[in-house]
Structure formats: structure tokens, C-alpha cells
Image (cartoon, rainbow, N blue to C red; front, side, top):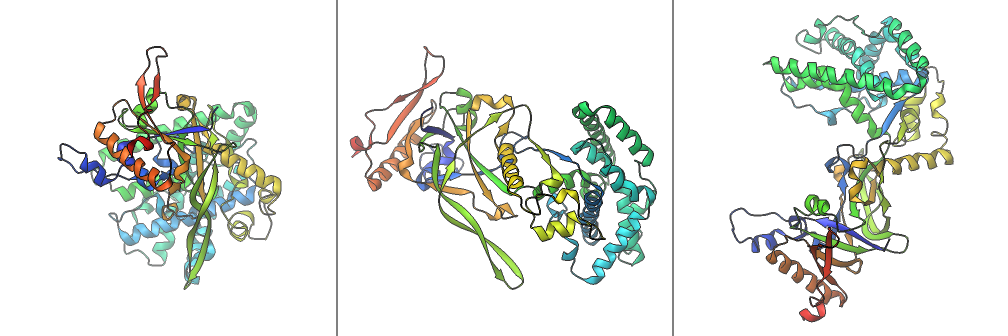
Length: 496
């Protein structure tokens, strides 16, 4: 293919608020614009804001020894205790959400010795149950790995009992004024007993070639569970959102949140190999009323942007303040792979977001100082582990289902190691020389074209350019596609 790449944009993204309202003939509703063209900006979108709900999806599985499974349950309890404490302090109307699940918190982060003793008591209370004590061992004995929906079933089976243990310790220490309603549940009600795990493991061994089918069974169970919860909430007039989050939603939200432990935050800027697909014009250029930017790349298909080059930090009191450092950087444009399967990720062996001391404290050692086999490679920072880790990371960011194949997409990927990705600017700027031309859509309004031409004319004067090109998109009867025709008289030289 050529060294040109295309980016579709709607008019409100390209022009400023002043431009848009100056060309808004009706004047009825003020229009807000992002002024990307004048600022020479390329916006990197968080994955969850893109139109494919499967963006960035990773087929995570859990396959570990008894050490990491016990630590997994302890981590679950640590996160759940924080949510339960917030619920008790704030009441039923205090807003709680998945962002309140502190998946990066460690036991050593608990602020006081009293708090640590409280959590120790919760752990002791939880593992005093024989079924709960055997949970890590039974999970470790699985002959095939555990996928997301199966693990979700196991977490739901212990969730009620876990809440009871936390509520029981809170009540014992007088931390709640009244008996929490959670204590109305049977404290011995672990749904999945040892007998269940023996049967489940036997079934798995007999169907090692049917792991996908096994996960489908648990996926169906998850759908049924969600349906029952929906009916329950519909029929419960006094059911509060925070009760729903604490009692029903926490297990699934926890599994979503712990994905943050695997890879850094990522944002993507989307480009296309061509500008002739009518669906692309409709979806990303506001029904052909926007434009398409034509960029040129270098011979290695890189685009040069002024953006985040690294992340630093400085200490302010006892707090470490993260800071993004900016500079010029070449971004490789990676071709999206349209595959029915998403990459598989081994959770316990892919905890790349966490520093080694954190991994050792929370995940890889038991109370007696014995190390998990899952620590091999990751703790020693083995080069082969590192290579595979980033390879799987990249693969996950450029994999989409075949339904999107018509987009012929290429992506620039911005990775930031700031845990709170919202603190990072996702706007980058490009050198005007890399913008070869602009293609007007079939429905681009004349007044918007004039505003765009004016901006480009000013930039060409500033940069002494005479080679900028404008094109008009049109429907070709001969090809049956959207084609572009150069507006050869509309050049910066002729505009002067």
C-alpha cells in the first residue's frame, strides 16, 4: 500500500466553537467544537469509548497453585471489606461504584495496626469454615484452566459468606450501630462444597478438549443469574443501588477491575487504509458531512507526534505525584487483525503492572515464605517473559472481530503507566507537513468547507507550503464506490 493513511472526523471535532457558530445559519443551538484542525491535534481514545464493546477484550484464564489462589481470595476479601466499610459509613444512599474497588491496595497499606488486626480477624473468620479453607486447594487442583464466567460462579458462591464474616467482625467490635442485614444469611452457606469441586474437576478431566464448551455452560449460568437479579430489583421497590452493588454486583465488578493489574492504560488513534468506504464516512464523518484527513507516513509506516514520551514523578509530602513527560515520538501504525478469537492471557503470570515488592507481598508468597511457581519469569524479569508479555499486550489492542473488517483499520497506540488514566492528556499534535490533504464529504456544507480552507490557508502561509491538496468525495458510477477527486484549482498558491 502507499504511505498515505486516512482519518475520518466529524465537523464538530475539526472546527472550533467560534467557527461552528459563525457558520451556523439557524443560530438556534450553540455548537461546541474541539478545534482539532487548527490545533493540529490527534485525539487518542480510551478503549471503552470506542464503538465496539469488545475493544481491548482479553480472554483471561486463571491457572495457579494453592499459594496464588489463597492470595487471590485474600485480595478479594481485602477489596470487599473496603466496600462494606464504605457502605456502613455512607449508608444506603452513599454512591459506590467499581472505581471504589481498590485493586492496587495491599495489606501493608492499611493505615493502622488496629485496622490490620481487624482484617486478620476477618481472614481467620473466613477460613475457619472447612469448605472455605479447601477452596484454594480445590481451585489449584483443576486440570484445565478456569475462565472468567466459571471463576465468577465460584466468587458468587463464597460472596455471601465473605460478607457475613466481615459483618460479623464489624458487629463484634461495635463498628456498626445495628445488626447488618447481611447477617440474616446462613453463615455456612457455601454453595460449592468439596463434593462439587471433585465432580467439576472430574468433568474437566474428561473434557479437556472442550474448555470452550465448559465456559459456555458458566456463561449461560451468568446470564440466568443476571436475569434473576433484574427481576428481583424490579420487584423490590426499596432496593437501593448500593445494596445492589454490595450484594449482587461486586463479584463481576471485581473481576473487571483486577484486569488493571495486568497491563498499563492504553489509548488508540484510529486510521484507515482507504477513504472510499461509504460506511466509514457515515459512522465517523457524521453521515458524509464531515471530512477525511490524509496523512503521510515514513517508509516504516510511522507517524511522528508530539506526545507523552515517559512518566516521571515527584514527592509532595508523603504523596508521589505522577507527571507525564512530553516530546516528539514516532508512533508505529499497527494493522488491526480481524480475528474471531481474542488473545488468551494467563492472569497469575501476567501481573506486569505491579512492582516486584508488591507482587511478592500480595500474590506470590504464602504466610510461611514459600514462593508460588507462578512467580517464575515475572519476578526475575526474564527477557523471554518480558517479550511474550508485550507481544500479548500488543495483540490484544489490535484484535477485533471480523464484523469490523470493512474498516481496514490501522492504530497508533498510546501507553501510559499512570494508574489513573484520566490524569493523562490524550491529545497529541502532529507536524503540519505530515498532513497531505483534506477530503470533503459528499454532504459537507459549503460554509464548513470555507472555514476549513481558511484555516489551511493560514497554516500554509505560516509553513511556506504550496503542495497542500483538497479533494471532493463523490459516488462513482463505474466503481460503485465513494471516490475522491482532487480540487486542483483550490491550492494555497491560488488562494493568495
